[in-house]
Length: 85
Image (cartoon, rainbow, N blue to C red; front, side, top):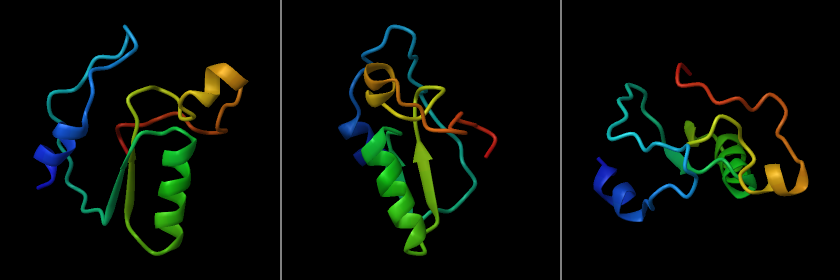
């Protein structure tokens, strides 16, 4: 699996409330995994999905939008993250 490569790219959380998960169990098969639900991550996930890829978007916060959310007051409608999906 790609877990070692993903872990090499990971940085410690910058927000005090964010607690990294040591392991995420998943049973679904994806063609593309996008790490980060900021504007770029959302666009990448949409593009991959529109091109026929089974896509998973992983975000550590409750809401998508990344840095744009608090700075610009931009929130992605219906973007509450869900571990059950």
